Length: 71
Image (cartoon, rainbow, N blue to C red; front, side):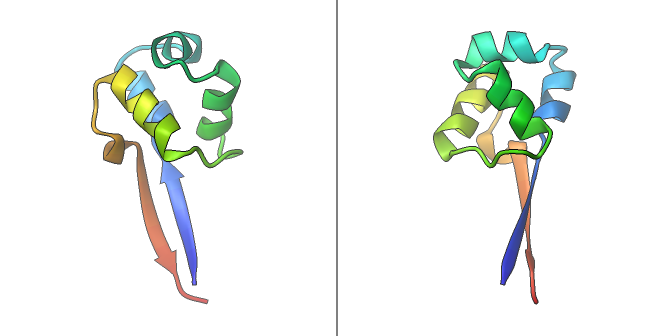
């Protein structure tokens, strides 16, 4: 079994009209880490997702979705 995760940090950030640097300052998550999440280069921790969600004033669950893929 494989799980595919899709992140919506970029979309939610754009809805709030924030730059990645602004989100970094608000969330305490580095600009580089935010870019890596948005570009699919990193799977963030739950704590990181909660920090980003708090800065965006949204539910952390709205920042991602997942799908179970059977082999």
